[in-house]
Amino acid sequence: MQMACKKARYGFILAVIKNWLNKQALHQIHKPRPKFIQYASFNNIRTLNEVHQSDTTPMPHDKVSNQIYKYRGVIKDIAIRYRCSFALTDKTATQMARAIQKIYDDPNNPLSYPNTFIVDRGTEYMGECRDLLPSYNVRIQYANSKRDIAIAERDHQEFEKHAYFWQDTEDFHLPLTDRSRV
Image 1: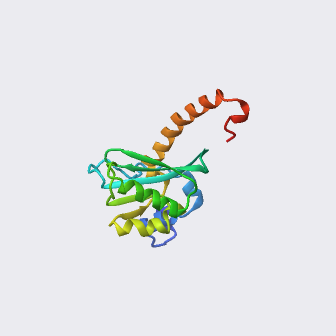
Image 2: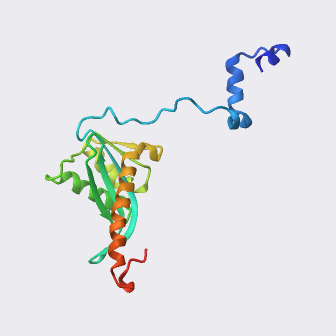
Image 3: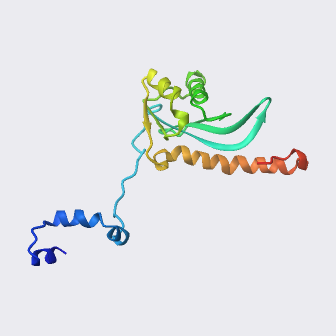
């Protein structure tokens, strides 16, 4: 392409041609895959309570007394992969802030307020959570993709693999009227 431009007596340099070519849709479809894509790495975090990840996921509705728990939240320490999970009735920021404060204020829990708290851009981390964490000098980092909170996401997968197996087994032994309908 550069030779064709020179023959037509255009004064384009190679950088301008590459920039123009990268913007063309047909070239984007057929160009080779990049050799290296940089992802978030958590290997160099080795200090307890330096960085935590948090996420929520839906779960089968469990009724305990008068409350129906619909979501499972998890806070995971990046360095030692220690997990603290909790059940939520809804994904409001108020309930999430109360759960986070309860976990971090528990003296029997090894988790304390971290330096950095990595979360997705869900509404459960807005509002009161955004006000609570900076009051304890915690920097909130919003993840751009699910890969940025992959440790918490993997924890959800492992939980579902083991917990739902036992729940299905117990439901199998119940009469049809008492089985879970979710």
